[in-house]
Amino acid sequence: MTLSGTYAGTITSPFNGVALYANNDAASFNQYYAFGTHNFSVRGASNNSSTARVDLLIGGVNVGSFYFTGTTPTVQTLTNVAHATGSQEVKLVVTTDNGSWDAYVDYIEWSQ
Image 1 (tube, helix red, strand yellow):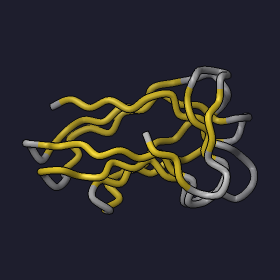
Image 2 (cartoon, helix red, strand yellow; image 1 turned 180 degrees about the vertical axis):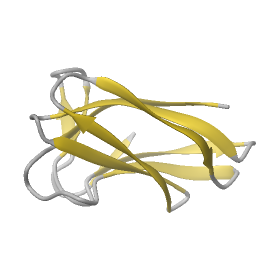
Image 3 (cartoon, one colour; image 1 turned 135 degrees about the horizontal axis):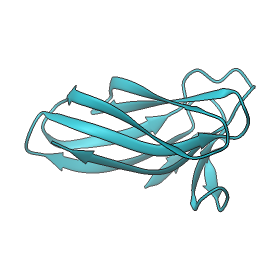
């Protein structure tokens, strides 16, 4: 994954992953999709009891958001997500930061 934004970085607790601290902090990669509908799951957590939000963009289009409440890692899933096919940038990005939480992301996976 490629990290971008002012503060995005790696973490080792509560898992080996990435931390997205502020608006426009993101983790992204390119993926080829032959089919235009998938389920997407992300394992993540907040840095505290506040709810952290991470948006999923595929090909620059916001296709949904993942919400993580509390410091215990959970897996959140978006089902039947319609998106463009072919080679697409997949990006997990913070867009609603208000200074009360940080988002921690462990992994993203998808299935049909």
